[in-house]
Each structure stands twice: as structure tokens, then as C-alpha cells.
Image 1 (cartoon, chains in turn purple, cyan):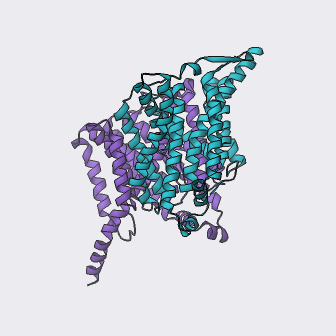
Image 2 (cartoon, rainbow over the protein chains, first blue to last red):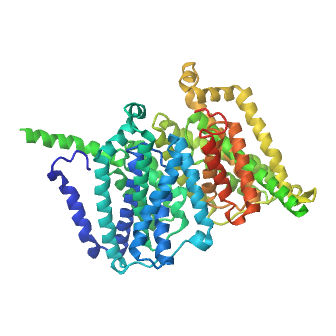
Image 3 (cartoon, rainbow over the protein chains, first blue to last red):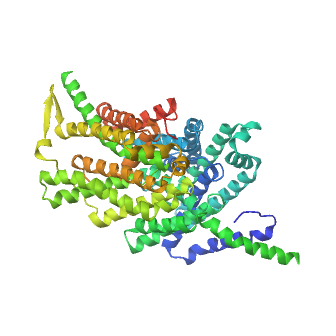
Length: 320
Length: 294
């Protein structure tokens, strides 16, 4: 969607989507507003993972931990301390980035599957602590009824808050990817040996990317608390991490907008199949298998493939 | 102090027998990982199916001890059949795809299996009981040790020896080991690699089913047991060395024993101990303790 933007004209579909999303909440039933906001939060989470996964080829297998750390930090600060509320909102992403730095520092010395496995074990360690520390984190019950500042206390205002933060984060992520930093990251993905040879400190660069990605995951965690007003240890469980991973693969992990699409598909499928039957994971599994067989490049990859000839046609007409 | 020693001994036996279950499951996972190079996320689901099928056979025979033994033999076979169907119908068409796509596929299988179990057996807790002579506990040097755990301590090494004999002494085992190292070469000398993969996948999944059937009398059989086992199994296989059966054994022992000592030392955070052990091992030996086939 963001590929090859050279002039402002090609930005209009994105602007149109944004404006539609802005005017929707008063029209839509509450439930749909909520689902849309949930899709926004999940999209940000998936995009933050894709920064390291699709653009860096770093097997971040336990990304959910950072989401959970961000959410738990803001939840604990809002419900257990009397600090100003904005401190909690700022502390969430920072805590996630610090944990990302710690875990990443251990993990970057490994590659691929081993990287992922060490991250899963470190992440599971954090999950186990959160899951068991009843007096502090509420254990497997989690924390509920977290107080929110008045300006985001209603669903619609929370929706707008989440949407605006999402748009800002998307722009930031896009700029990061287009910066020299992002190009180097993609160069490392494509050929780590050559990058090392031309003097790039591969591991340090990957670690920086991980810290950035976990920071954005922390923001997603804060937004989750804004929307749900509760946290529970499942946010840090590996199943969620795998789901985010799947969203990136499903949407198309070499595209910028793929993870958004993947997140939207996953959340929508779960919600709407969940209405009709309790066996929604069965349907989701079947759909996933169909997608693997028929859309190997991910949904976004397929869309781009269809769009490409049309774009070429338009260009040719312009040439006339 | 005497009481402490007794508690220590019985916790050790509990940990070791837990390690045997983990080993049987992980050996299967490791075998599939070694030959097919696929992290099979659905492995835990097959373990769960094994436990539920064991329950079905057990209740079919009215809970007699014959029912238990039949369940122990038939459950892995049913799981093998399920995995054979999944492999031949779907999985075998994907081998040339990228690895992450295979991971995605096994995740989809996990989702499907999870719901199929819910449809067939429902969401209630199930349990089966061991035959009378394996119930209760024996007292060894003042430590009371459940008999079923001792039974597991015998079964585990038997499975290890059986697997070793299979991979080292049979043609099929040797072919699958060769396929793990160099699959092109195996194909070149005229062996149907696709069927080697199918065989390895089915054997690996069969072990998951056996693990599920064996664990059934010691836990309540329920949905969600797939999620817990699979993450533990992946970590064990990684610290042992990917695709290495003895590595799976060592990893399982570390995981099982640290957990049971965790229970003794700090029950609330017992679950943290094995994960911490995994982290320490991976930091010291990032590629696992024993040689990986990758």
C-alpha cells in the first residue's frame, strides 16, 4: 500500500480510509466500534513485529511478552500508584523497550530458530513470574477495572485516541523503514555476511531494531489497556505471540501494510465466526490452510500482484 | 532432616517420571524436526489426542485393567493414523515451501485438532486410572513413591532403547537418519523421500500419542494440555540439540528435575525454575548440549 509513494496523489486512498474511520464511530453500533479499535491495537502490534520479522528477518518468536509488559506496566501504574496518569502511559512503552533490550541483548548472539527459542524461554520466564506473582500482578486473574483519564473513558473517545496513536506510529514506522537505519536492516536481512564485510555492526543494529520494535509493542500494550481496562497473563503467553507471527505471515510479511491486513483478518474471523459457532478455531484453521495452499505470498502479496498490472496500465496511458 | 530427605527422594522420582513423559514426547518432536526440518506445532495436539483416545478405550472396556493396556497400545496407533491422514492429504504437498509456511501449516493443524477434540470429547475434565497393581505407592527407604511413577521410569528407558535400535539397526531408521543429513542424496539413490518423510512424521506423532496415553492416569485430561506441553517440548528439544534423541533425553531430565525441585524449594514459583534452567543452558551452549543435526 505504501510501496513507491512518489507523489501525494497516490496517498488519497489512505486519506479516504482515514476519514471514513474518523466518521464511523457515531454511526456504527458500539460492538463494531470496539472491534475496529481492537483491530487497530492488534495491527500496531503486528506491524511492530514485522519491523524485525519481515524487514529484519529476526525470528522474534515471543513478541507478545513486550506487549504484555507494556500493558502490565501501565495497568499497575494506573491502579496501584497515585502518579499522574500520563506517567503510566509513557512508562509502558519504555518498560517494554527496556525488557526488549535485556532479552534482545541475550538473543542477538544467536540466529534464526535458536534466537527464537532463547527468546521463547526468556519470555516464558517473564510469563511464569507474572502468572504466579499473585500479590503484585494478580496472578492468573489479572487486573480489572483499571481507572482511565476522563478524556478517553468512553468507548468512542478511546477509539479516537487509539486511531490517532496508531496513525502516528504508522508514520513513524514508515519513516524508520525508509531511513538509512531501515535500509541497513533490510540489507542485513538480505545478506548479513556482506553487511558485516562493509562494516555494519550486524548484531548491534539488530538489537536496536528489536528495541524499537518492542517499544512499539509496548505502545500497543498501552492501547490495549485503554480499550479493555484489564490485563491478564494470556497477553504474555506464547500462543498470542504465535498468533501475531501468523498475522504477519498471513497478511504478507514483506509488505508494509500486510500485518495490518493480517491482524484485521484474524480479529474479524475470530469475532464473527465466534458469533455463529463456538468452534471458531476450527474454521480459522481451515481458512489458514486454504490460504497457505492458494495464497503463498500472503493476502497483501496477492493484492499487490493483482494491482500491479493495473498500475502499469495507468502508467502506460499517462505515457500516451 | 530425615523427612526432608524422604521428600527430596520422592520429588526426585516424580521429576524423573515427568521427565520420561517429556522425553517420549520430545523424542518424537525431535525426530520430526531432524528429518523434516519442520517445527511441528501440532505435536502437542497429538499428545492431547493420545490422552483423550486412551480415555475412550479405557471407558469402552469399563475401566478394567485390560482396558488400560489396550488404551496404551491403541491410542498411539490412532494418533499415528490421524497424522498419516493429515500428512498424506495436506502436508506432503507443502515440502518445497518456505519453512515459515510449514510452521504456519502446523499451527493451523493445531487449531483444527484442538477444536476437533472439543467436538468429540467435550470440554469436561476426564481421567483414567491405572490398573490396580500400579496404584498406590511403595515405600523405599522411608520415601513414599507412587507405583505408577516407577512404571514410567521403566517405560522411558525402554522407549529410548527402542528408538535407538530403530534409528541405528533398521533400514528405515538408517534411511531417515540419512534424509536428516542430506535429503537430496537420499533422493538421488532412488529412495522415495516423500514416503520417508511420511514415515518419520507418523513415527514422531505416534510417540506424542504414546506420551499422551502414558500421562493420562497421572493428570486430568483436558483441553489446553496441548499448549503447555508443546512449549516445554520445543524448549527441551532446543537445549538438547535439534534432532538429537539423546539431547531430548538430557533436556527432559533437566526440565523435569528442576521443576520438581522448584516445587520443593519455592512452590509458588516452581514453574519458573525449568525455564530459568533452559535460559542458563542456552546462554552457555547456544546450539544445545549435544550435536544438532542442523
